[in-house]
Length: 352
Image 1 (cartoon, rainbow, N blue to C red):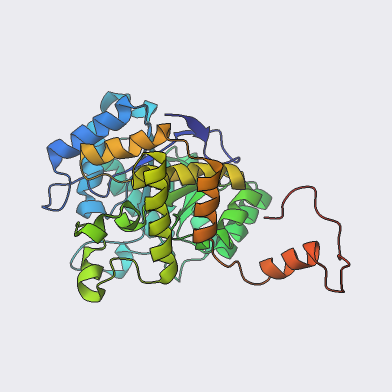
Image 2 (image 1 turned 90 degrees about the horizontal axis):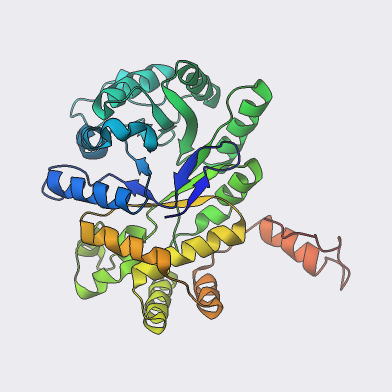
């Protein structure tokens, strides 16, 4: 396992993978207590140091299990947790959202479940449509000064809100925003339109969830396998292949896997490492195994190297249209708007 800083705004060192713990629990569809322990220990044995949790995962049980497993080695690990939502059957206005009140209450409950005095990164799980970003940033600052969190980040926020938050933090002299969390994979690259370039510009770390697109990129649904998209398959018959491009992406992943003598999981994760190098941004995938065997498949991907022809195929088949103004700017820089004359000389570095 290799390590990197969580973006350029912090010296926080995180492992190459973040272990997602949404499956840590005793529910029938979860990993079970023994399975969660086995996954945790195998991840740590492989050099993993970074864990992603949330107050809503398994109704809080995931945080309880992670807290038990961290033990006396707590300071050797990085814990990212999130707040905003609730799994309670009776949801009251004061128990959800991103207000300072909810942030503090939720963090205190998470600290008790995690059996720790602090978490490394705290993030709102998603925007609530109500709380102003300055209130969130002020809450982060208070908790950092109190020693209860080390860094703040934003999960599932649009790029314009994150960029505004990053600038506000810098101009106000507060602790800088450390990073974001968003969905990203070969089957879902829309974050390239705004989120990833924004993160690169502001030096933010990017934690990626659903790097296998809910299991789509494993190919298991084509053979009747079960997973997060099974309910969708029952309703629509597609199991995630709801566009021609997504079908073409999975076809390409399976072809590359066969040619490279590896599996589709390894191909999808190897492409993410390649993409991080291309965009020169800290892209850190969350792997969320339900069994130790699943984790082994993710770890095996760390040793897979694909050829440039494979990366070209995967890049091309999965590419998303960036739309305006990105395509207009690219056309002006390369072809010009007046015959063959360019408006500007080609930049020394690619425009992100």
